[in-house]
Image (cartoon, rainbow, N blue to C red):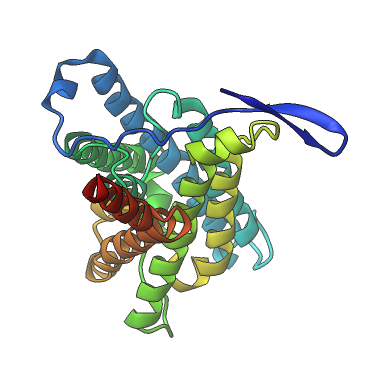
Length: 286
């Protein structure tokens, strides 16, 4: 039963809360539902649009700052503008697709949610495949429209910047992805939505800001991956040796960061292990 709780002289109605059941590890029944394939298509299109806009922004910035073309070091949108492009597009696309697919648009996010049993293995695998394919198509569109500039300015592909060690780049990707996935868990936590129902929270906003802030910090180090599909799509279409040599960083780092975020949120903040132990003890005592 819902209870009326007084806060600051006013009243709001708190919602009863029950943890949703964990997603089945393998749910073959999903494959028979149109809603499942609609969600996979939504992930593909969202990732395509994400890469199209953001990689065009990166290449446009490099053109605008190229001194051989009359550009200046302080010209163009700058790192701040690139970070806004990535964060802003995530905000827009998560807002558009959250009700259809959950708005993952990132294999690391999907992996973290899978570890937390928010999505099934079948859904996770097909989401990741759709995201990677969408990223390839998005970068392919950029190359088709900006072919002369695409190869000249690196195709928006991620690689470790000069002067940074592999360990530094890997750590930057781990920490950056942790920030993103931790924000995803916090912004979409159903318990928080029930508890703070009197304070409406638009989940895509903090998620987009997390992407924005991480880009500000790590663009100078790795160009900011924190999304294996983004790095994979750009590497496939650009097909340069340096991005491929460093490419493992942009899978290993984000997956480690996502796993740490899932463990931290589920077993530390939500105390899932303690709850499970308590339930075991209660059933044993009966």
